Length: 339
Image 1 (cartoon, rainbow, N blue to C red):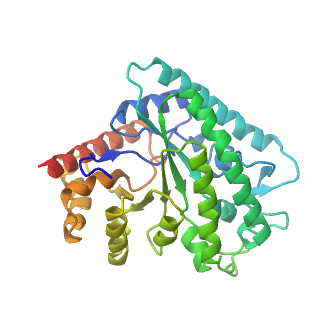
Image 2 (cartoon, helix red, strand yellow):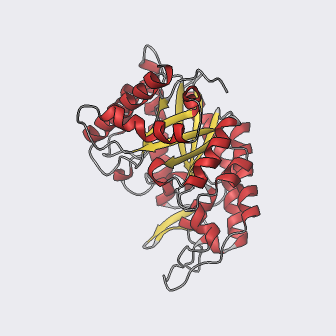
Image 3 (tube, rainbow, N blue to C red):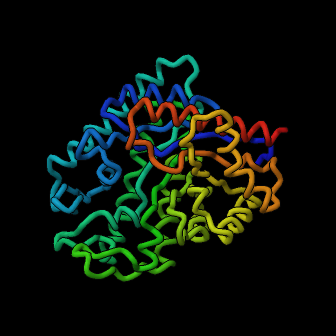
């Protein structure tokens, strides 16, 4: 990994509103090269545009539909999954039109997927329990997702030829699944923990499939508490994304070792303030612990910054403002790094 590489910015793919044209124009306008724009997900559009529905639409020969408690595995596809397919196709077509009209298209594009443990924790089987409780269902979901991501990346690559595809895998429920703290559908008990070796093998399967499909970079997004960082690294991923405020000392030590071995940290920063000096304060959220770890500032090129939380709870204008602050924070870190 080059030590002169600059800090760049991206964000979670969830975006407010229901206009994919507006969303893509804002995101690509605020996060142009050297930063990494993303293909927005617009959950406000309804069923099929949420993160679970979008990723479930990639599953091969595992149809799903929506029940009162959430998405469920079913015998044959219905209107819900057709809506998910339609929304995704629309977004990819719009991406092709907007990127094709740009004079200087971005060098990279981030795609976000729900990872296999979180997906199986959010999907339900016929009897009404989470799919993650069934070993066979977990295996089928992992294999089906690995089979589907290649087709997905191929479609996106055809929309933005020559663009490097960066993949963020959302595994915010992984720690709970491994610890056995996920509640059952009834809420009265918790589900049995998932074996760690199985989780590592499942992630390796997905990482290998994404690599084969041409993914340039693969990073897992995790809840910081009890995040299985070592298992993610052992899967072959390029790094992990964490909210900086929640990283423990032990996790910082793991992060330091990962960075020294060429891995990346996507650092979730708090970007609530628009006051003077806020970019410098945001930069301190990563620079201060970096120095405490004894890492040279010129290794900050291993960092990609992002908001600590998804932006879909606000308005498109608020999201645009946060992305502007984010790129300003990246600039502030680069200035200190090159100092």
